[in-house]
Length: 231
Image (tube, rainbow, N blue to C red; front, side, top):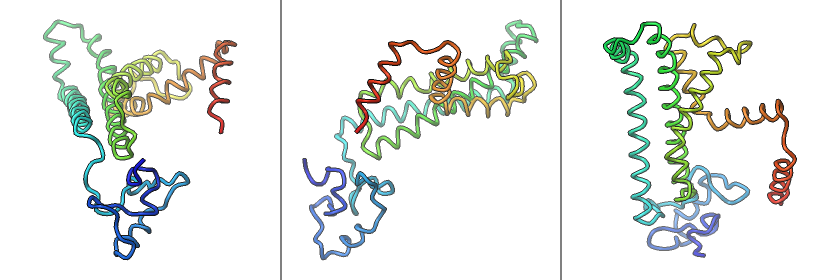
C-alpha cells in the first residue's frame, strides 16, 4: 500500500502532489503540527491530508457518482423547503378546498403535512451531512448508495409514524398533543424526528423488546456479534 494513502502516513512523511516534501522544507515542520492525531492516526481537522494536496483521491467515475448523489440531496432539500412554503402560504389548503374536501379533513391533514415536510427536511439534512463527511473522510463507497437514496424517505415515514403516535396520545405524559401545536412547532418536531430517525427506530425497538420480550434466537445472534466485534 502506498505511503500517501496509508492511514497515518501524513504524520511521518508529508506528501504533496509532486512527491514527498523534504524534511528541511518549512511545510514539513508545519504539517507535523496541523491537527492532533487520533489513536488510529487519523487527523479529523485535515481529513488525513498533508499540505498542498487539493486534488480528490477518488477516481473520476466515483466523483461523478458523488456529484449525482449531491444533486439528488439538493433536489430533496429544495423540495422539502418548497413544500413548507406552499403550506405556509396556504396553497395546499386552497387546492384541497377546490377539490371539495371538507374543512375538518383539511385541518386534520394540515397537521400531518407540516410534520411530514419537517421530517423530510430533517432526514435530507442528515443525509447531506453524512454524504460530505463520508466523502471527506474516505468512507464513501457504492454499497451504501441504497441507504443514501432511501434515508430521507425512511425519515419521512418515521416522522409520520411518530406523529401519528403523538396524535393518538401514545406520549401523552411527555409531549403536547399534535392538534394544539402551531405549524412552526409541528415543523420543528418533524425536523427533529427526521434528523434522528435512526435513533428513534432504535429506541422503539428497545421499547418493543421490553414490552414483548426478546426471542432466544435473536439474543444468541446479538451475543455472537458482540463476541466477534470484541478485540
